[in-house]
Length: 201
Image (cartoon, rainbow, N blue to C red; front, side):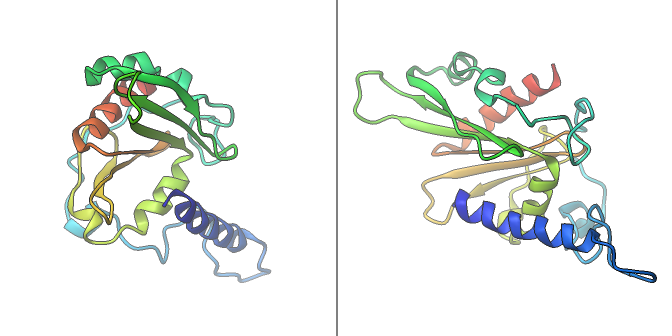
């Protein structure tokens, strides 16, 4: 799923970059940051203002105006011990960095009995906000039917097709975008809240 998501986002980013290319005098192509031609956000569709908590913005410096995450270590930012404590569970084995280039950084966490052959894994991606914004613009009406608050400007808890995984996706405009994937909806949301606290520090 993540590989497919990255392919789609790369296509969108490429299209946006092409739109920014000089088009000569009188060009009517929108700038990369323009929302012209994109579907409305959930707040636009409802006709009202968003009810989710406003984000605490991070320092500027990223290529899309958010914080500079080019060298972000998610495993260091969101320590496995802190996550395990919030979830009240054991650490099965050390977390792994799961970076995808300079614009998307991730960490995979493993929970359960250290002696068990199986354990629960949860992956957290932190990326430039423009990437998450592009992904949110492509969500289906069904995926947008479960908005969540308390994470940033907009967020959704999405049940994956087979029903065995949940994906929390939220955007903190001008700061970062986040995606958290795992098998328990409440754990995914708890991890999200811990991460928001860390991002605000």
